[in-house]
Amino acid sequence: MTKKSGKLYGVSLGPGDPDLMTRRAWQLLQSNCYWTYPVKKKNKASYALQIALQAGLSEPENSIPLIFPMTHDREILAKYWLQAAQIVIEILDKNQDVIFLVEGDASTFSTFQHLAKTVKALNNSYPIETIPGVPSFNAAAALAQMPLADTDDTVAIIPAGYGLAMIESLLSDFDTLVLLKVKPILDDIIDLLEEKKILSNSCFIEKAGAPEERIVHDILSLHGKKVNYLSLILISHNPYRQRGAMIRGCRKKETANING
Image 1 (cartoon, rainbow, N blue to C red):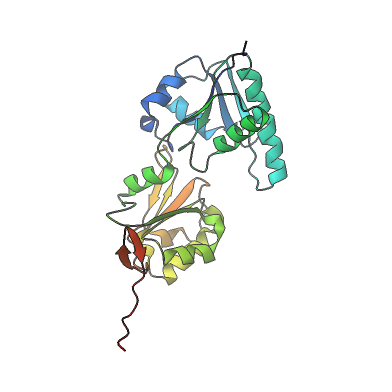
Image 2 (image 1 turned 45 degrees about the vertical axis):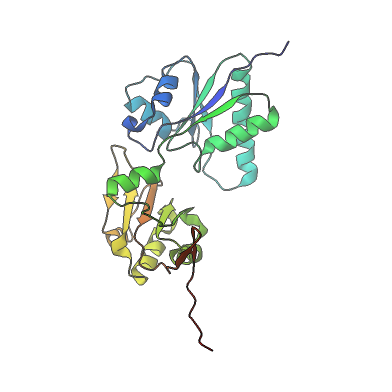
């Protein structure tokens, strides 16, 4: 007889406003699932947990923080992913469903994907489900009243950590750019946008939907200022975009006619 186990859910809560939770997420939060949530270090607050608490929910007794440190060191991260997965598996083996609280959307630059992959690597038999939600850039675009795309517009979404060379390259290929996690190189990005004369097409959004949200259209005013890690820049209707003709649903750069 096959041993029963609980199910692991990645529950997307949206970027900050608890009203943006889906009915499915709300249902799971009020079930008897075991809550887990990410923290950067022991005894640190969890942004994802705060979203749930702001919805009027109380943290259940059967809950536990999972540590995911802020580092790019793959060896260190792998150690904590393994530790978190082992904790989750121990709960699942008691036939207890587990939800992992996710800020934003669980399929978009989310810690949950690393947790789910590690659980699968240890034992592929555990059922896992991702509950979709509102990503930060969708909420930010709505708050800033800047459409992400219209008609045949193209959109690129990247962590700003890829660097200025990548950002400049994408500016020539996409109508809309979403730059995530801009804090480390914010001044450099502002300088680039000023050089390209597209500051007026850009908007800075910090902690979209949260009580501390900040929306700044005058991005130049942020030069030299400190910002939160949970911040992004939207560049919409990018005039620097090198537009081309549409061929079978795909863009193709126009070539000059040469008369022989």
